[in-house]
Image (cartoon, rainbow, N blue to C red; front, side, top):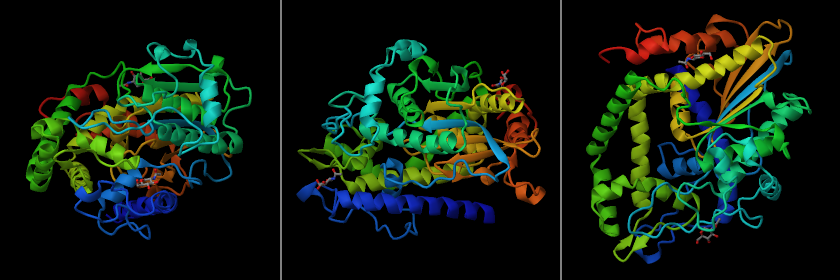
Amino acid sequence: MLFRNRFLLLLALAALLAFLSLSLQFFHLIPMSAARNGASSKSRKRIMPDPVTEPPVTDPVYEALLYCNIPRVAERSMEGHAPHHFKLVSVHVLIRHGDRYPLYAIPKTKRPEIDCTLMANRKPYHPKLEAFVNHMSKGSGSSFESPLNSMPLYPNHALCEMGELTQTGVVQHLQNGQLLGDIYLKKHKLLPSDWSPDQLYLETTGRSRTLQSGLALLYGFLPDFDWKKIYFRHQPSVLFCSGNCYCPVRNQYLEKEQRRQYLLRLKNSQLEQTYGEMAKIVNVPTKLLRASNPIDSMLCHFCHNVSFPCTSSGCLDMEHFKVIKMHQIEDEKERRKKRLYLGYSLLGAHPILNQTIDRMQRIAEGRKDEVFALYSAHDVTLSPVLSALGLSEARFPRFAARLIFELWQDREKPSEHSVRILYNGVDVTFHTFFCQDHHKRSSKPMCPLENLVRFVKRDMFVTLDSSSTNYHDACHREGV
Ligand SMILES: *[C@@H]1O[C@H](CO)[C@@H](O)[C@H](O)[C@H]1NC(C)=O
Ligand SMILES: *[C@@H]1O[C@H](CO)[C@@H](O)[C@H](O)[C@H]1NC(C)=O
């Protein structure tokens, strides 16, 4: 348990650092209150928490701000750190797309007026924004596997379409890309200046927001890259499992997990009451309101400093928002305890982890292709991977979250390779299932690649149930 506490502390510290700098910027922008619901708002409480410390009790508003991940200036990160006799030989980046417009509208309300065109005089801004737009306009379909080749390469609607990436989302990933470029290219020379197309592996789901996020990151990473050397593959599954998606036991875990979620919701009378109030305000049946996933829309209002929607019967407000957000946090807590989601995650994340170790092993054997891999994905991709790695204490993947696998070669013993795992810039290697006992067992400063390989090829199934030792058996086991 000590370990778990230390992990929490570490994440808390990282969050605090992030939050302090974020607050400075945000406070500057929002001097008092973003609750613009005016007279109808019962509470005149400030919506911004005190930035002095992370709140001692879970604060839904604080959590929501971390989720927004509003771009800020200097970000501290631990990517690319290793003892000097280690050489960085490959990097695998799994991202969640950046800030987006909601996926569903709240019924019978005006949707938030957010402009998804990219403009230099709008905040947040990135110095490469105009150059990015310019470079994207030169891109051609031959750099993309179908159906990606028919998608817009950057967001461009004056009123965002549902699920569209926003300027905030683009800036978040330009920033991620620039940060990674400074570390991996400038400092560690991961790619030679005349890198070849097969040194990059790029893959995205078939949504414009993931494609555009991947492109923004890539542009921040390799400014003015040569379009002829770029090829984005299409991944049809959000789990990145194509070819190995059939897994009945995974689906059974998911059904049980959904049942757990449902029962927890029923137990929360404050939540039910809140949905009831909100449904009355927008004048639709509670069921319909709930099905529209209002928290997703409200988070968009919140992250963009746009007041929550009103009708003639009143306004959705901060108190509603807090109750639903708080429930989400409690749901995640219970999810960790009951471990059904862990079962789902171990099976769901296996294919992408298997793909990643396969790529790492080829590099370790001396091949020079696919040195840098980028998977552009969703919260429902990152969450299971984090959970499967044993990082379930990590917060829900924020917009533009990044999970990175670094592969290092020991120059003193060139046949030995080590991995580092970083989540949003925090080194979490020694919190993973496969390396949490490392320092007890070994005096090596880094986590050996073999640990990760053994975990993915075998131990992750043993974690699930001691009778299966491979993906196929674990997916087809009877009587879960
Ligand atoms: C947020 O909203 C408040 C109140 O309308 C406004 O004064 C402030 O300028 C807004 N901040 C941003 C960043 O748009
Ligand atoms: C794991 O990777 C190997 C090598 O690429 C591949 O042959 C195998 O099908 C993969 N298995 C799963 C379950 O993803």
